[in-house]
Length: 356
Image (tube, rainbow, N blue to C red):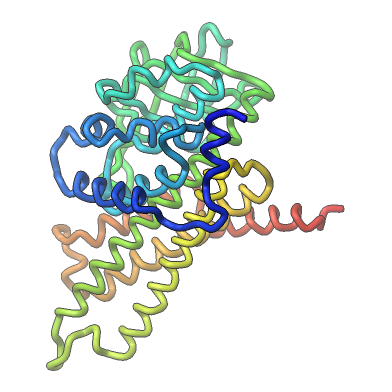
């Protein structure tokens, strides 16, 4: 048994947040509260989160998928614009290809990375020289490396590409806090390239990582918006009473709290399964459940936040619209709640033998 397998075997059979998890959450929350422009480098170096970003899902003695979910949740709560997901995807790619050199220049934060989160890049050419079109690339503007995946002919393909020599065109999106870009490259020599069945297996790992990180991020969005709404209605007075004391508002807040807590259970249930080395159909069911419930929670809380704040929430200066935008943008770019519900139904049918 390898050191990583021993580490994962030590993950308890019943999930619980440890003191280390709580400490990590506290450190991250303190970091993201600081608006300095050096946050990405600080996160990787001063906090030491490079192993969480680049190694957690791929396998690490120092970090697990639970740590990555905590990082993504706190990043979502802060609307952090750093390449957490792009870094995690590159880490999975480097581990699958046994190429630690691919992430070595990224660990200190001096170089950054962008990624096409959903497969769909257009490739032509071969492994030595590629013509590539990919959009939207998360954190693409200003990145030195870009990870894209899609198909070449009828074969799946994954490539890590340099930004040098290509056009990386910034795009405007609904979520103004997350930079997006279009990658246009001709005759690009990839830093890493894989095609065929190996790329198919890598694509599965990339999708699972993206599902976990986006679900945890949306959980953070929902939790932060919910907490801010509870604080507001507990202080805002109408008709001589705080808004939160009205029965209708109480009922709505309970519904929102239920949605957030269901999403939390699903997200960390999926992360816990990955941390234990679970790699089967149940993994996809857990991740689809987390994707479904986190999207429902983030969208419903985002809508309610604006409504329960009243007129102030529709002003540009108020924070509510930024969380509303982040929730809708992530769902639009990575899959809606309805899409995850359909995927979950198909996975459950497969598990229960409905196709037999």
